[in-house]
Amino acid sequence: MAELEKLQMYIGGQRCDAASGETFESLYPFTGKAWATVPRGGAEDVDRAVAAAKKALTSGDWPAMTPTQRGHMLRKLGDVLAKNAERLGKLEVQDNGKLIAEMGLQTQYSAQWYYYFGGLADKIEGSVLPIDKPDTFTYTRSEPLGVVGMITPWNSPILLLTWKLAVALAAGNTVVVKPSEFTSASTLAFADLVEEAGFPEGVFNVITGYGAEAGEALVTHPDVAKIAFTGGSKSGTHVYERAAAGLKKVSLELGGKSPNIVFGDCNLENAVKGAISGIFAATGQTCIAGSRLLVQENIHDEFVDKLVDFAKTAQMGDPMSMDTQVGPVTTIPQYEKILGYMDVAKEDGAECVMGGTKADRPECGDGWFVEPTVYTGVNNKMRIAQEEVFGPVLSVIPFKDDEEAIEIANDVEFGLAAGVWTSDIRRAIEVPKRVQAGTVWVNTYRAVSFVAPFGGYKKSGLGRESGQAAIEDWMQTKAVWISTSMETPNPFVLR
Ligand code: NAD
Image (cartoon, rainbow, N blue to C red; front, side, top):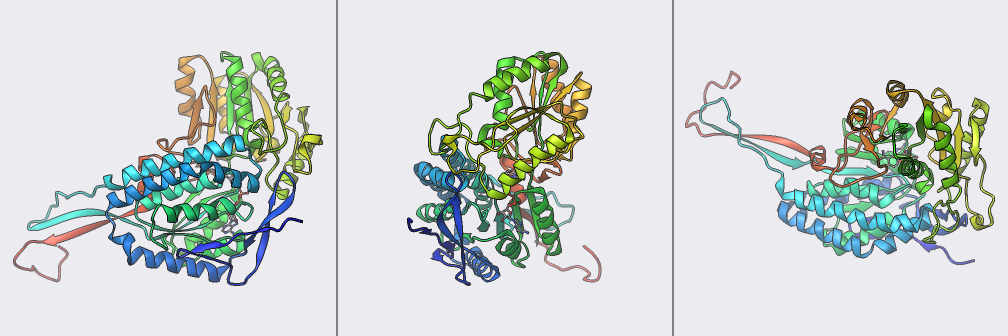
């Protein structure tokens, strides 16, 4: 048996094991075999990482740097990341089983966030206030929050870290990140790139471990000013409650049950591709999955036939092959959860027109594969329409007209994203206004950018990542008052 790679945490610029010396294994979802060991960090490790970040915040080169210098360093990090994108993408595939065809490009594109927020670092201005007091000069400064904690999920580790990290560093914070226990490797490797870009030690730290141990210790640490969390709604709610006890700022990027709404007047071929990209890309393991496909009654049957014909051509198998289109499920619990939802759909009376089982194909080897699955006859009250499956499982729901489409679209506790397919300009403008979601795509799906704010309505989260305004969530405002008076007035009254 090949020897497992031994991964180490990154604290204060040094590689280290967990204080306990304990580790756990990381598995490759395509083979189901362990390929690396990961330190099982706990409270003691979090203490050390937070102490290193606190030191870097107040002493040494980082606080002395001008915003322009920080911006240069961020752009350098973008360059280093772009240069290493392929290697990092492969590491992600090894950990999460998503496709190399997507992860390489995604990692390459992540560099853009460092360029964008690097450019923004020296454009955050305070103001001189037209204060209503004589002999007084009052101005505001935007300052970093301090040490910030980041907790990321397993589906796109570098991209989702980047959405937080680029902006947090641009604002001058120092960082402790805990990646998912299932996918720690790329974040650990990324620490080398941060070092290569020249960031002072302690500015960026990585602790690994389980949510209930390392994650919990980070969320409750008294010296952490903010927790930026991406993950499931259940753990997100728990993190919110725990962080509230310490009065920490919190941002949450959580799950979704996004409606992809297909109107009868759409370009059918494009809409079929949009539906496919909404649910089968990334094996459906994305928060923005268009897992509820709302199809207007007059095209329902024709649309479903076309969709199933197209979906049947999807190639499954080795995620490291550029030809593979649907890869394995990332984790065993997730695999079991998806299969469980297939039972739920059957019990609820949904009609399975494609898939509905685990995948038993030679090209899938020992990996945790499920068949791309389509259910029709779904009623929006069914669990399969209300709960996030996080897999390649599509619920098709028919609707009559615009009113009914919008009602169904919004009748869910989530509000992360939505798609609208139409060639009617009125619908293209009016429907997005009424859909309760942080992102609405019209005649496209699954597009993201550093320029566009991203986040959830309702139970899909709190706060926005990306876009210029995001930087405000990583800073705090100070008002500075300077008296130019020669005399201090009555000290017993409010001035
Ligand atoms: P998860 O909630 O199980 O884990 C996410 C992270 O939280 C992991 O690092 C985990 O260790 C940590 N964690 C778990 N319990 C914790 C606790 N008590 N305290 C502190 N940390 C804790 O989610 P997952 O299964 O890794 O990811 C899938 C979920 O993430 C899906 O629901 C998906 O929709 C969501 N997601 C959302 C977005 C978004 O931007 N809105 C993006 C990607 C994924």
